[in-house]
Image 1 (spheres, rainbow, N blue to C red):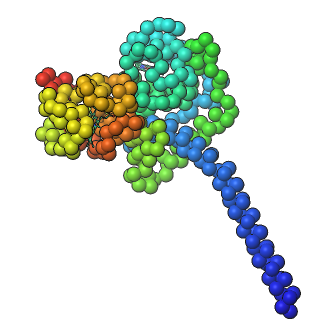
Image 2 (cartoon, protein in one colour):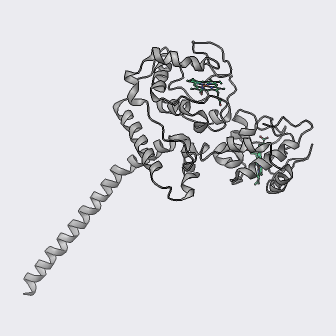
Image 3 (cartoon, rainbow, N blue to C red):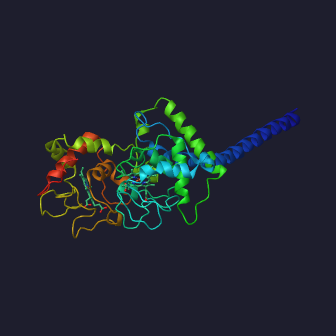
Length: 342
Ligand code: HEC
Ligand code: HEC
């Protein structure tokens, strides 16, 4: 008995082991197959809707244009794009107006026009203007790039956007290819995911906040800069001074005072980035063009690391819009000649 039953036992143990190994291998394989996919969707989703800006009150997921472009009508797009002509030129080599020249914009980098003074909201986005990026931007410029200088309400109709983007694509010596089927599928999937996420009750308020902070999109998480700018005029500088005690560990505020760990902040509002002569700024701060206008400050003080990746201000940020508005109202007073309120 013992020999045959131990043989049976061996078989069973063997079978269980094999099953275990098969399961492990399958699991690993499945993981390998699924993971990159997952990451991809997350990346796309993070790119969606300007970094998940405020799901609760949030803008609806944006319908993708990728699948519409092949049949879109550039001539109609040119017609719609007359709305852009107030601020943009489209011809090769034409000068900027209020906005940059847009020849060759599709596939180009954010802030592509040499010499144009972009907001940091745009210039700090480190990726190309793909079809869906342009789509999101022209649907709702401020949601895509909070703090952008493009004051344009957006084009709500997806057909209009597809036509305009099809037109923009023709503005090139060498138009970039239309989206591939894979790209179309990915864009549609991202849209479906975003819709599903929007339909589901928010799991917790934190989900709308800077979840994406590990990605480049961190520049835009739940950004309420526009709201903050709107609050500055009625904010209390005295309160701001109180909150700014947190900054005083590293910053001095008086006219002509010396730098500490951070630069002196007298006259910072409206000044350029890295304004203090002789202070040893990070390359990130020196090389990020722009001025500390209200929107830039509101954006930076929300999450300094995300706003200007690589800058050396080790400060977590002021999450409450009221706090930022008050601090900025206080900073504004630190000047011989305070800049006008927003
Ligand atoms: C009221 C003026 C105004 C209107 C109207 C306007 N724009 Fe803009 N646009 C701007 C400004 C200003 C910028 C620079 C934004 C910044 O630096 O934040 C800009 C930037 C852009 C950019 C990014 C360019 C780059 O180099 O990164 C694109 C793309 C763009 N606009 C497309 C459009 C399209 C398409 C329309 C019409 C549907 C339009 N804009 C309408 C003012 C405008
Ligand atoms: C732990 C130290 C620290 C704290 C706290 C801190 N900062 Fe900073 N801050 C810095 C450093 C360092 C820099 C320079 C960053 C660089 O060069 O990358 C800086 C830069 C800045 C700049 C850009 C200045 C310029 O010339 O471009 C502003 C604006 C600013 N801080 C505002 C604030 C405010 C407002 C607070 C409080 C709410 C604050 N900081 C808290 C260390 C700090």
